[in-house]
Length: 438
Image (cartoon, rainbow, N blue to C red; front, side, top):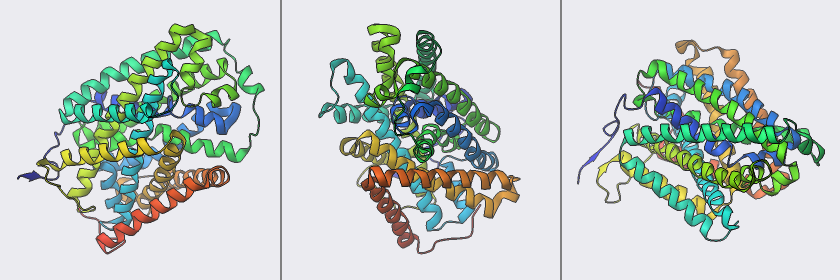
């Protein structure tokens, strides 16, 4: 039985600039708009549109580390490369990379459950076994498309991105027009809002933008990567800022905060009814299905590449379990199985919270490592790196405080998960740090 490792299954230059932007926006818009709008509104109250703006600002600072590193050393599984350059091939780099991978798998399950929630909404089905069943179904669809090759993923990502960005923009403009370009209902129903909750909401807003890491993880397959990886990240974040603000204002103009929170798993479909009637409701459901399916597709693609890179770097163990073919194909299977399990056993709120904890811890380690070890080599501005680190720390502290009061078990799950990842990698690699390799 033959197996291949490393970049054997990777086609350099197989993803165009447009395809990379499609994948990046696919992950971001799928999670940010359809999965997280209601949860962010629950925490931020009438200021939930502002939460998206602050999330975009912090993400712009965070993306600086990834852009500078990817411009210098573009590769598939790019975050693993960044961490190894910063900390060497030891447990810290491996554990942080694994946390990033887990947060991406969590994002897949989050968006998959959102897909199921929207698809079942016309039938007034809000729970039951059909939700996880459909979630697993869209994850399997993403697996089949990914297994067919990079060009299929890139082409489908472009088509889906055009459909959903155009459709969401149309929804936002019409709904905002219908609501009178105002926010009166949202402002009048704010109750129990405080500064800590608002800052905590930014953690979920950041999660809505973290799809830019999908681009970083596919750097070796993007055409002219030294130039296009950074451009793709900046374009994707800019597109999503416009889309998020448009939709947040449109939803707030048609629903009160209480109504948004009550329909937090399908808030866009609920906002479409008063603005566009029943036909608008169905239009939003179809749009959500396309957006979330493309989000799962892009995330599965990036996670499998990152896991393959970690295997090639000897940062995680690997077992074939009797499967033939390249390691990347095995990683697709492992990714799909884990995402499916999360989609079955966790609800949307806890899935999003776990993803936020894992991502913020990993992101802080990236900034600190780049600042300490490689900032001079890549010509990075130390003040920007420290600012990104501080922003993450403040948001993580507020989010932890809020969750300890409202759902302490999810904090426990996150803490145990993070400790388990670092403990496992320390045992496997026998050292915390190592000398960075070329």
